[in-house]
Amino acid sequence: MYGAEFTEISDLVYQGRGKDYRAEAEYIGGLVRGRMPGAASLLDVGCGTGAHLEAFGESFGDVAGLDASKDMIEAARAKDLRAALYQGDMCDFDLGRSFDAVTCLFGSIGHPESFARLTDALHCFARHLVPGGVAAVDPWWFPETFLEGYVSGDVVTEGERTVARVSHSVRSGDSSRMEVHYTVADRGSGIRHFTETYTARLFTKAQYEAAFADAGFDAEYIEGVQQGRGLFLAVRRPAPACASPEPIED
Image (cartoon, rainbow, N blue to C red; front, side, top):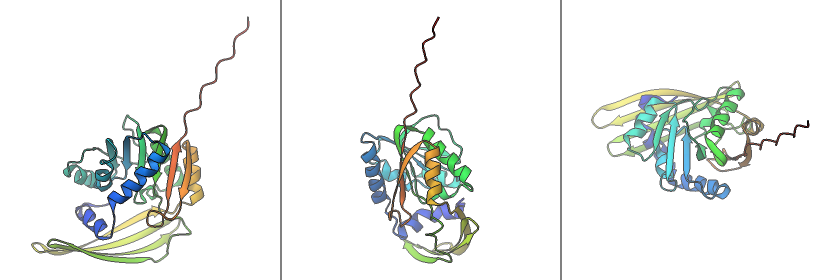
């Protein structure tokens, strides 16, 4: 889970790394409406500071966000977004309502530590969708697409603040472990440094497909998008109709 120090600089870091929230929201919104033309409500799971929600709010009249991090939710609330915001675990939440669409981006679906918990998360998504509703899920890397020892680095400046980010990723059993170092320089407060470690499960494509099916979705996988990780687009199947009772003979 992201800490308070990263939350403070997260928007600057992602935007500096080329994250185009509006373009991504338009693309995913178009896919959702391709399956459900009248979609008007959306829940973003793992919403972070609400950058995607801000963009989704331009095309969906009713938007909400959920994140496990209290710091992230507080940062999103500080933006005064036109969205309902909730703190909660993606594997176990109940908002008491349903939506036309559920999104889970940034590879956040890799956070569940087991296949059972992944299935729990997708069941939660299904319970918060109307029949025929659409889930758009950006997976974390598959075992065969994860790059062992991958290193990345970025420097971004905005106003009087400069942030340098360097990361190194390794495989740890069935998961990836990414260590990230941040150096933040401000004119007034000087230079500070902190480190965060993020662990995500390397689920296989087949595991995702099985979890979607178990949760009552018809899912397809779109290759090459979302920085190369691809995207699962899944439609919630209608509940099976109850069979009419057999007549009772006297």
